[in-house]
Each structure stands twice: as C-alpha cells, then as structure tokens.
Length: 280
Image (tube, rainbow, N blue to C red; front, top):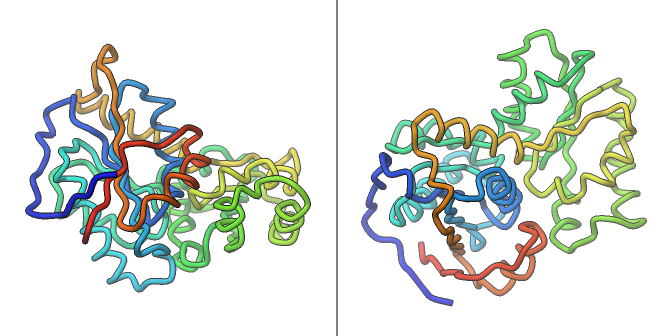
C-alpha cells in the first residue's frame, strides 16, 4: 500500500473523456455505487475515496459534514476527475449545494436519483424510505419526492442496525431476517408499494428487506439510479470514455486500509487492490 497526502487542488480537464469518475463516501458503503457504475459503464475508470478515519458522517453536524466533503472532493480532484459522485446519503443531504457551487466538475448525489426513481415507480402514491437516523431525520428524500410529486405520501424509518450487519456480512439468516421484520413492520402497515433503500449499505440486505415487505412492494436501489444519472450526465457532455480503453480503478482511504480491503470486497463484489492512504 502506498501513502499520499492532500496538497494543492488541481482541477481535472473536464473536457477529457479519458479522465476518471471520482466517488467518495464516509466508509465502504459507497462501493455499492461504484459497483453499479462499473456494471453500467465498464469502460470508465473510477477513483474511490472512503473517509474511513472519520466514519460515520451521520452523527456529525451539517457544518462538519460539509467540511469533510470538501476535503474528500479536493483529494479526488488532485487525481484528475471529470465528475464527482457523492456516494453518501448524509453528505448528499448537507454538502451537495456547496460542492456544486465551488467545483468546476459535475457533482451528483445519491438522494435525488433514488427519490426521483421512486416517485416515477409508485402506483398508489405511497412510498417508504429507509436509511440511517441522520438521513431520515434530514427529510431530504421526502423533500425531493414531494418536489417532483407533491401528492405522494412518504413514510420513513431509520434502520441503523442494517449498517453493521452488512459490514459483518450478516446478510441472510435468522438475525438479519428478524431485524428486518422488526424494523419494517410499521412500514408494512402503511400500504406502500415502493421502498427506497436510502443507505448505500442496504443493497446487500435487499433479499431480507424484500422478504419482510412482501412481493407487492418494489425496492428502489439509489445506487443503481445514481449510476444511470452518471451515464446520462457524461453522455450529455460528450465525456464518456472510449469503450476500447483499458480500465484501472484506484481506492483511497483515510485510515488503515486492511479493514477496507476485507470488508469492501463484499460491497464491491470483487477483490480490491491499488489502495492508497490519504492524510487529511
């Protein structure tokens, strides 16, 4: 593993389709977004930053989250990116406007794509949102849904134990199934037909969540919706990478990379190499 230190920010030449897509999260959860981008855009190179020394963001104040998000963006801009994905629901809720105002590359969060897809998918106008306590308390998903579909009713539930279950690899069996049933029992009585997975860890538990909600409820994966917006944005700007090019993905962490490599492989679905340590 090599070490690198953030210094002066160098903005990418955003006219270069060969530049990388930058993605950051407070930890490993954002790798589910990376996985979806890889599946949808296999020719694109990705540089991912997990701010593992300062995880979780959900317990921090909005001011602190914005400060952390700026540092992550600066570290990725140093490495020459053409687009930034904020693969953290908390940072998407609090820091997106600041980053868009300050950066000269497109900035995409995970909240708006997931919320818009849910608003388009619902048939009965009743949507559930699950996420961390911080994401649910922010009300950002409900705000975006109501902005595009004011008549829709939104029911939210914080499911904090889903995060450690996903990181421990407990994605099936009696413990995650009972946890899902306990958390989601109330939403099951709200007659929702669409449920947003409003945390990047939750796709790993999609099986037990779907079982708890029943076949009548469709799950919306914000990571998949975000990957679609990334493709649309780059295509609209004429900056998609040549499909014939070789790809090489890079990973940055702000704490010891050992745990990130081990746990992150479950989120990414493949082994992780080329990990650098970033000293903020």
